[in-house]
Image (cartoon, rainbow over all chains, first blue to last red; front, side, top):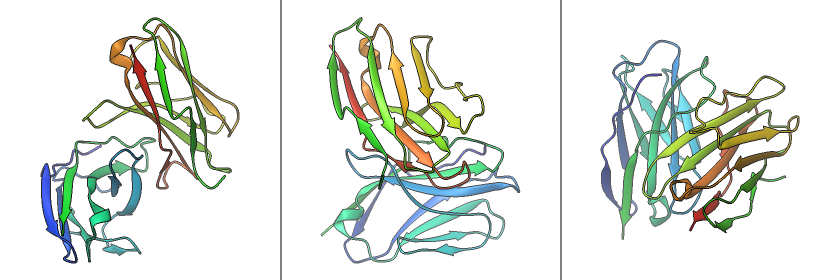
Length: 110
Length: 113
């Protein structure tokens, strides 16, 4: 599976949009982009995934560039409860398991 | 059940003892995964079960680690002759099929003293 690169940490003011970037320049055509987050002392939580089209659900939006070499997870109105480590993972449907990297630690402040 | 249940939530054991960790996946989820997370670090894949297929054991760190799953239900992760480096949170996840998003349990925090 393609490797991903994420900034180690980011800050965001409460109520503002949090935009978390992820680079996956070696992604191949059959690989999906998944996002999970892990709030302190809890198991990771699935957020969203996509292939090439932008995706939106009740938690977040996923914007994937046209060349698919990078993506951005958007939390439209961040709250203090969104403080967590966010993992961007690239995975093909031929791969049975998710491989987690080190993620981005998002700190939402009042 | 409503979510993935793991037990015990905390386990303290003496070095050299065996421990058994349990995971109850969401009913109907065919895929089940075990991960390990050491303090301040990311998740390490350990083992994966999918239905009646042979499990993917490629992440097990040593032969002291083993896991079983009965059909599409409960799984147990066994660590024999525990070492201090085994101290970590052991997380279990299940998914409807392998392509779907995972639902994780809250984990078992293992401390080897």
